[in-house]
Image 1 (tube, helix red, strand yellow):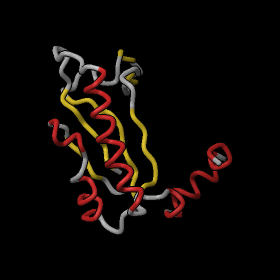
Image 2 (image 1 turned 120 degrees about the vertical axis):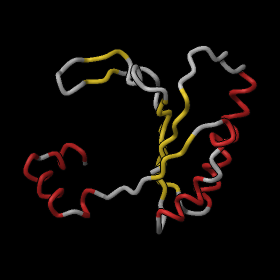
Image 3 (image 1 turned 90 degrees about the vertical axis):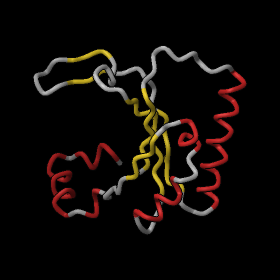
Image 4 (image 1 turned 60 degrees about the vertical axis):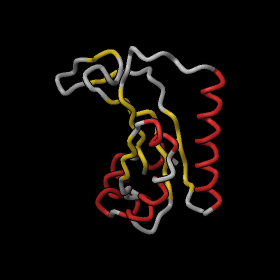
Length: 129
């Protein structure tokens, strides 16, 4: 999984429509190249709207109230190794704009017997299917 992070900058001027279209085209081209190589699995962009629930049950407005970075989205890729995923991440257009890409291994929950048993016990598997 690639997690895309940007510095939070509330004073930045929003990009023009043309700038946004150019950036989106770069992202589409990059993701398409990953798909053409057979490595694409899924992706989503995260919107800024949200809440954060803390361990003391308090809820704060916005998921990023106390941090300097914003998680803008993620991309799941099929890779044989972390190194291969890092090579794919090197083409991320966000890197040219100062963003970071966190590359993490993801374990399919069905691949772990303890997790699978847990899901079976709480009947989550039926809800997710």
